[in-house]
Length: 140
Image (cartoon, rainbow, N blue to C red):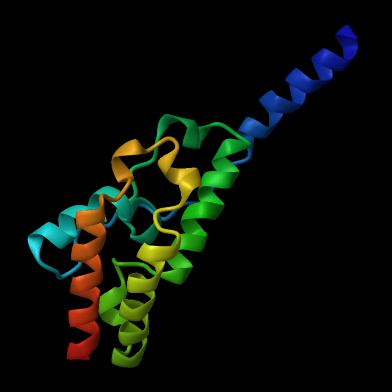
């Protein structure tokens, strides 16, 4: 039993040397939106959907770091507010439609808000984001 425990501890220590690649913070590409919208996005969305990620302490501990990295990379593939302005207008329009739907259905993810309680959107914040995304959709 002691040998098994030693092997498990060795594996856990060994995997700490497997590094993760998360894009570093990029504060120069701010998303252009009203102040109150940007405040909500920064609080509830930016960690996964921008290059302005605030990494928690546990993001440096494998295997949790692998989950965090994949979660962030997947979120950025779907929507990255840091590069949003570079998208073609048709894609931006699609993203605004998805924002409105995602807020109602699943965002922010429950797995994220379990730990990040401040990221939970209030009904008023959801309505504000939905109204804003509808307005931006109509503009494009």
